[in-house]
Image 1 (spheres, rainbow, N blue to C red):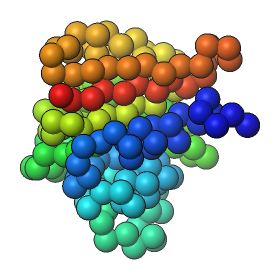
Image 2: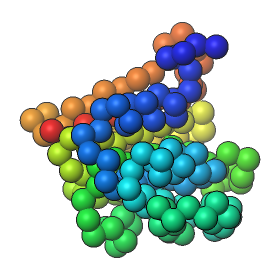
Image 3: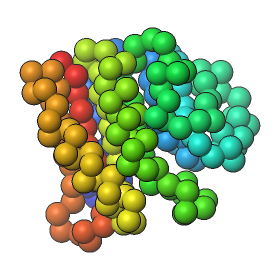
Image 4: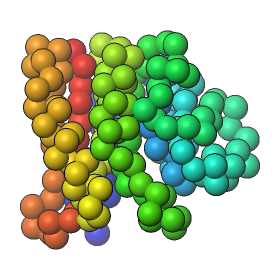
Length: 180
């Protein structure tokens, strides 16, 4: 097992833990099984966690984590629920592991969420986006996200892509956006 070139979620967590300037408020744009939400709640004072699937929200409620505000709605509606600036945002795109693979993040809602999230992001904040390209919608998301981030103002945002080059073309990619 590789230490650095392994799981994009672990790499994402490492980057956020070590390079985010402040650790007050964070968003998990894709709750799923709750691993990123758990990580964020261990490192931030407050976490907003979104998922469109009620089963994901209900499963996480059992953990009784009082630092986490669970939101059973699309991450595209960040501005409806969050009225404060945030220090980190994590996305693990695709579908709920172990769940219905026909329910997946979608291009339009993901781009809208990233746009809204960057407006909420404090200086010194980080957005991590784990992109899974092994399914059709994931490929569409990758293309749209890459087009969007390439046009971000370089004076305000640094954007870096992590991808494994000697594996399948469907290996996940990790995109990091840092706000100056």
